[in-house]
Image (tube, rainbow, N blue to C red):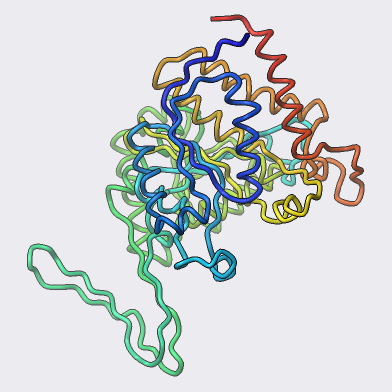
Length: 415
């Protein structure tokens, strides 16, 4: 009989569609047979978010703050089609955006590398970690359709009763257009700088901040100035002692440099840039399904781990019709392992740490032994050359991982 490892408090957030199906299988086959968890579950499925007016998302974020570890499944961010499909009360905001705006911090994304998965960018022999500022900008913006001729203005009204500052954004003519107002805060940018520069120290890698400060002289210029000030004051001596460095680069130059590099650096991105570049980098390493995503909060104690991809709607439609799917669960499994590793670190729980590390190793070893889902088989053989014998379906692959995990854990020394 297996003695369950006492794993402590974890906030689990269920999601949508095919990733929700996989999420339940991961818990059933890979987590619950080995761990005794104090699990706080929140259903962030589209229907529950709508039924609770999205209060469940806020409650989940507050629970993560309370218990310090959150593990989140992929969720739907509704567009017009989804509003119609689910008959939603309104077009709710991205749950990830809501959670990140409550918790603050930086999302760090890193490729999961397997030796047998060819990279689309062959020169990337070391990982690139994207540090995405998880607060504000487009994700907390106010946008609207300008209905016709008129003036859009921005106004800053000081709390101390001083003179307001007014700025004309645009004088619209004809049929109008669109307008957007967005912001960030000095405190949040400082937290972003500290977490990015601390990650550089931890990894022993250089850090690059990318902005477009030549165009957004005040907005992006603020990011550049705060990073430089904090680096010079708190990190420069430590970086020089380690032979690493911090640099600011223009986003277009940084994209080109990243393509030519061998990897092995932290790329600190503003919120939208990080959203885009993390997917681009993941694909460059082989697959969007092979990337970790961890939100590290400013308190240094709170972490939220998630799958860095969508809900795999196309596979879910096939699953609903009873058709076979081959959906990659690795990013969802690593959401669990990264959350559990943080719990282990907080609680100094060596058994839990060994379990999480063993599960990650099993995922990589299983793929490197030739057992994988269709997306990875396509990476190796190409779309037109993949045969059914080259890959396992969703359930077969999870069963294989469960089998290999059982073998690995049984051979490990007991603490």
